Length: 583
Image (cartoon, rainbow, N blue to C red; front, side):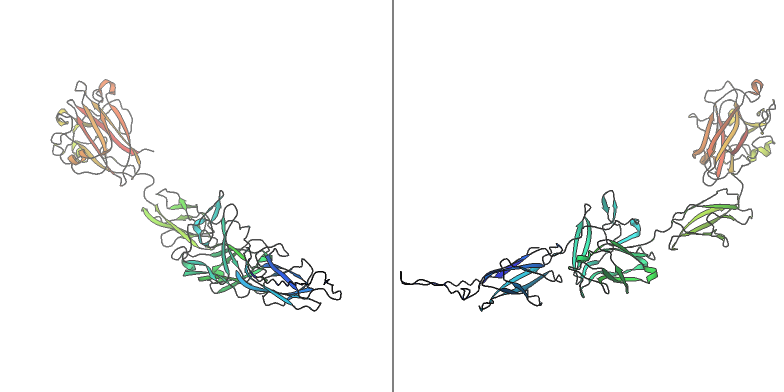
């Protein structure tokens, strides 16, 4: 800063005028003295200069007196120190470095001009205002590399990424960075304009403090029962204008940190080991036995609370439902230990990839398995998943009752019956004109029994839809494995010579039904309308039949139904109805 000088300039000029009559008086010179009767003290100037170290901070003042008849000057800089005596030679100056304890201070400089020839002293004064300017820091610390979500910032611009500073998501609210008696200043450093705090004049009892309107509870920094682990702070000072050791007080504890000249030092405090549970303020001051030079500036950056990243538990397991021995494979991240609870009340393990044998009671059961992992600080995180064991091996292979239609009419019809099917017991007519292929797929070359729809049993509405009043519906409820692929297979045959619209309709219904009207109106999982009319199964050397295979996926409860009817004015036949897993 510039020096603002208010000077009182006293100029004493003594002019001697001698009058004499022309040609009557010839002046003579006194060769025994100086020829002066008084000191002529013409001016006194003061200016701001750079000190011996080349530092120009506004406090180094140079005084230059100008007088005649002077052998020496006595200069009192008004700072409570002893006056300084300098020679009275032309161009003589004297300098003084005022204290940096104050940003602004007023002083009166008093200069006494002295003569060794017996002349009286002459005094000039100069009132000055000294403005001390802090030397700003020219470097900043490295950006933190800890993950954003694990940081609560008190003062930090954040992490550096692709030439920019990304601010932290979490910041401490209600913080006052300017508390304390030290001078606070905030500067921007470098191309990224990283903000850095400067606490100056840490001499003597001056302190810098950061206070919080609401105390920081360490155990709940990241939410209820989600504690912080450490406090980080970066410190820096230049010895010539700063301090070499700093004392930090927080949470009832005091720490001393020795600084390296002009090098940023990172300090991390472990809350658990130090027993710190709450922070009301963070205070910086001169360390014990430390040296405070010049402006005694401490530079501070990246003040934040953080936690060690938590582990991320994850696991997979073999999903063979019928297997009572389950192998678990760990897929966790940042985990240092593993604790398994297999959910049956007794099973546990600390292995990374355990295999556990559940009790084999022949029943299907579900267990809630929990994996708990810890991070580097032994903090736990858990995940739970449902594991089903026992039950049948693989998907259910349902039995279709009388799918071959080889029994007597009384045996066959009952299992296929649904309400609103005409006739007391028969959803279709029994027939000796069944398929030439057995239920196991062997071609015998001769017909067997099958199911028959005559023209009187078929759907006969004018629009082609089935009529529950006339149409006979073959229906059978089936239990299968949920969400599993199955094949629905059957054979059908239609006598030739009928209408082109003659057909056999077969579908898998999405559920169980007790009424044919409701079943007919429901949405099926799969449906086929067979229109091939090649004669009865046994016609043309047993080539009259058509085999149909339909793939479908069962519903989430495993309850499906087979639904078959005919729309034909000629006899139609069905045989060898099957359902089995697709794989």
